[in-house]
Length: 76
Image (tube, rainbow, N blue to C red; front, top):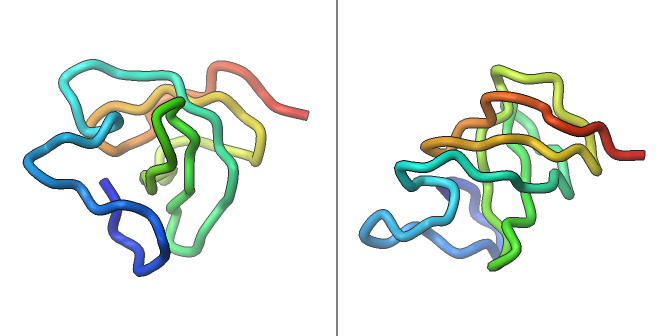
């Protein structure tokens, strides 16, 4: 889900990669305020919540419904 005011696309008709019914692996490319992060999905960038995990730039996280639920690989 994209909630920021930057250049990231906004969700329309639940079409965000990270908002679907299946959890997906994405890479954290930027950490934002309020426990949010910009992630690379392979189809573009989206903003997701990282409130439940200890995410770092470069980390691969598992995201479901716009929420990072696990860090599965630490980036360098």
